Every structure is written in C-alpha cells, then in structure tokens.
Length: 325
Image 1 (cartoon, rainbow, N blue to C red):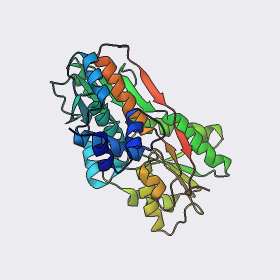
Image 2: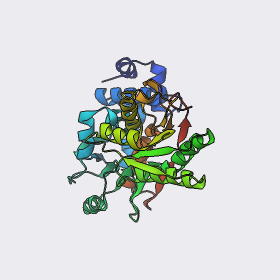
Image 3: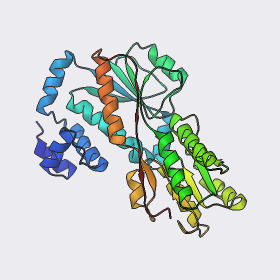
C-alpha cells in the first residue's frame, strides 16, 4: 500500500507539500499540485479521510470525465491541453482518488451509460450534446463553458471581467490600435473575452477590430500576414495563451519586437506563459480551483444534495509580465 512518502518521492516534493495538497492549502502552485495529484492517482494512494468519504456516500461511485475529439486533435499538435486543461483534469482525477471514486475518460461526443455522474470539459459542449447526456438521467457538471438557456451546473472563469480589465490596461498605457485575435466563438469563454474586449474598446471611444484564429489547423502564419499587411497595431489581445505564444513566434519572423513594436496579452496563465521569451502578460484563470469545485459539485449532486443548478464564475487576475509596455 502506497504511503505519503511514496507520493512525495514520485512527485519530487516534500511530505509537507503533499499534506498541504491533501488539505487544499492555497500556498501550493498549480504545477506542483498537479504533480502531487498525478502521483496520488498513479500510486492509488488512499488517505485516511477517503474511507470516511466512502462511508458517507453509502455507495461506490463511478464518474466519467468527458473530453471532446477536438481537444484530442489540439493535444496531438501542441501542449495546450496539458498546459490548461491538463491541470483541471489532474485536479478532478486526483480528487476522485482522494474520495475513493472511480473515474474514466470518455469522448464527449459519445455519451455512455454506466456512470453515476459526468463532468463535461471544454467549450465544445453544445445543446445537442447536453440533450443526449440528460437522457442518461444522471447528474452532470460543465467545466469552462456555459450554454445560455440551459440550466446546467457550470464552473467557469469570469472571462468578460478579465478581458475588460486587460484591454483597459493597454488603453491606460497609451495604446489605441488594439486588435483581438480570438478562437471559435461557439465557446462561451472565447465569446465572453470577445465581448469584454469590445466593451473596453467602445467605452473608451475606440474601434474594435477582430481576427479569428483556427486553433486546430493552426493558420497563424496566414493571420499574421493579413495583420502585417492591413493594420497599424499597438497591441493584440488574444483569447488564450497558446494563441498569444504562437502569435509571438510568428511576429518574430517579421522582426517585430515585443513589446517595443507590439504589446501582447494572453489569457489563462498556463505554465509556459512565464517561461516564454519575453514572459507573457496574461489573465490568470484559476484552473486548479475550477477542477476542484467541479468535482465537489458533482459529488454533491450524486449525493442528491443542493440539487438546484448553479453557475459558479471565478474571478480572474491580471498578471503583468514583459510582453507589454
């Protein structure tokens, strides 16, 4: 049977750090927490309180973590899933292990019976998909997305507020020609960031300008070529960090200096953002908390507690680094 020391060794941390993770201490970085939860899952470590959780639940639950096929395509091309959704997924899986609950990954587009609850991850969830999962008659929680008009439990960041603040930062620092480079707007999060950018520009008497980026086929070369040809640009606000990083990679081919020529802001604060050169100014999404709250909410629903649907929106945090003036 695995011990707390085995977990610490595999995760490359101290026993005290493992204890902080087990007690949901906030003074542990997302990356460290993800490593510890991975070690817990890998070793099948069962802390003492998980036995109590099982006794309280009166049954052994089994949940499905539902991930879209598009996310798999992105994962094959880059490390975006590991950088953002990977932290959320590790949190959910780690919490399941701590609570003694069996979990499995399934494709979002192929609902399957045999589970006590479902966690649906990403902006690829549609009304049609929700309809199919409702036929299964089990509780579900939506993560990093919300569908207008559907009363489904949802855990997501406040993308509008974060975007509004970020764009206002650029404007207050003298930038007026600010573009928004966004992903597919069927995503509630991307749409909220689009709206936050638009509101910030219009409220300051500026004209918003938009360019769409295909994150699956990675058409960044084409998009940047259009921007260089057609626009005078002070800054670009992107809908996530991986878009910002690919944007900066492409701009460097044109000898564009960041931030001297163009300031760049991303969204999410993935681990790669602070390691990039220059380090990326971004809006931090609290990914670990999203996964944690999503799991606990599903657990409540499986226990038939507090069953009225809720939407939880976590405030973001602006992180100033060297990609902006």
